[in-house]
Image (cartoon, protein in one colour):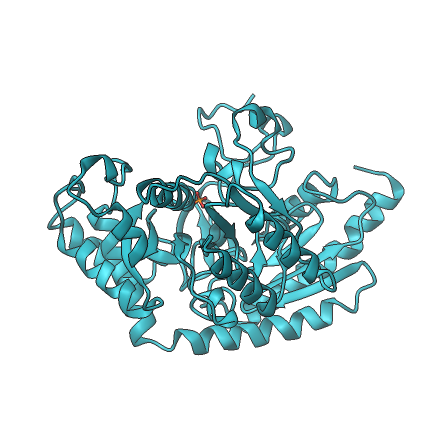
Length: 427
Ligand SMILES: *Cc1c(COP(=O)(O)O)cnc(C)c1O
């Protein structure tokens, strides 16, 4: 039995896997106490955008700690939150005029769902059905799990999850079935309150991409039926897919937008749910029962907001999109090389994210190969955490070509040696 009292996230402690202790981090590297180091090829679970301990973000945090640590955000305000809301309005789609703060991607999604239902209830035309896409992931709280894919992760909690309407994932060639399913769901009474989707790329569902034209069609169907369109850009936002928001590539603007992960550059937990004016308006009243009843204790924490303001300054003052584009090219070249390997299936890339599936005897998240790969990479100084038999590389934007070469040469090695093991049946 492990001596540490820490119960880790998404970790089966019974398997006895080592848990590396990290002392500090810089750029794309994590450093252990004993001098060992790991290249963070998944941006510490998709949050670190510009690199670890980015000097501008760290300086902003330090400066804020000298002034204001925390403040109730119901009826009180502070400059870092005011600046951040204005800064977001300046770089995010123009029609998203209101900024609601929370602490994580899951809470940003919960807020979005509550805003959607609150909107219809306040208009006197209550709606409660939510349309979701097959294989999607929106977080691990009960509401966020309800609108996400059902499976091994949440089957124990299934009795607590609410019913949603599912439309199929728009696999290549089958996009029309998805559009038609959404259209049918929108026509069926009672009308849905909202559609929630991960734009262009389903992350935790296995790095599954679909086209901008399909995303544009989904948004158009929602608009036609006056169903709210919620974009969960918690993972895809902040340049991951090559543009600030993935929605940009489809020329669509959601009614409600969820952002977290890269909002602070990955330094501190913070989220926003941005809403179109009409959603704020339906809550705007002298009638207190129409209030948006949501808060968490650390809503808009000033230190986290200061980190996010530094992130916005980096985005507006530095050539971030150029860095992202260069990283995309580097990823494309390496993915093309590794794709020549016979065990690599469905290589795919969008922006800074590259992924492929390994032809494994069993697929899915619990595929035997997954933990073996993770351990293999950990032993070679790499933080990579395949989703079952899906390997993906999602590094911070500061990663160099030489560093990426380390990642892909280890992947190449894994494709050779782990397969020999699987074929001979040894552990
Ligand atoms: C990670 C993620 C979430 C949940 O964010 P947390 O900060 O982990 O709660 C929600 N939606 C998407 C698309 C995500 O990738």
